[in-house]
Image (tube, rainbow, N blue to C red; front, top):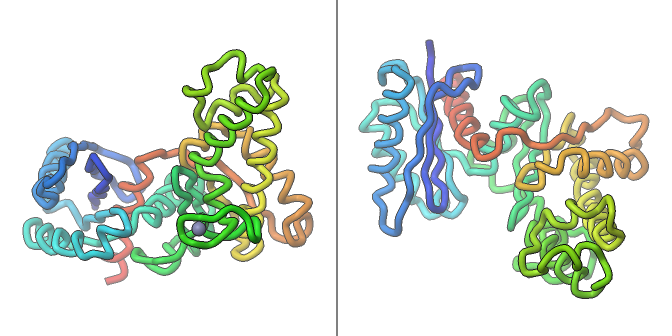
Length: 305
Ligand SMILES: [Zn+2]
């Protein structure tokens, strides 16, 4: 059976998995990364440990996909590691930018399974994403686009760290929702949110927790969703994918975010009711999407060779 390894270089942890051609994880492992960690050694250790964990041998591994942050790829750090791993394991190694990997993982094996054209919109401290077209990564594994966070949703709005004003990230990142929730709690001290919770412990889930019973919380979420819908509809209008996958911690909110997004799309999306439908779903694979997508991108490379 053909097997693949996906490796993910995170900020403080590196992880990896052996997967088969259907995206089934046969074994996985992770190791902490410290300042000055020898990344090649760490990734080699993980690769060896997952192969052993899968009770496989290296001759069964057809390709390795390594995903990492854009910066690590752009500054060449991962290119050296790629060469070392290629020499060591005598197998094709492909580098994949992490949001592309996450998008491909979700599209192939997670919330986008069954759709060939998907967009992942990942909402965290930053807003990033990836585009899968015809089952493959649009722009390839090192695509520079997918900067959905820096699409303006409020012309002349608040300034973004990129220098532009009114970016989606400024209004819809997890940090933005948290800040807006805290502001609303302090402003409306009669709200249930304020009474039942110390605003210092409020986070991006607080307003969702209280939205059914508390007017202030509901307003916070409604305003947040208004901006998020604007971003999602912009994506839908330009790319018309079969599905838009919302990733990040917010994905745990499920229908609390998908229902209002679908409603907004029905009324605001270009030919919302007549054109081809765009499904909105929440990501399912969490952090695993990246190793799965990195392995899938690597598999594509050997298949195409
Ligand atoms: Zn920006």
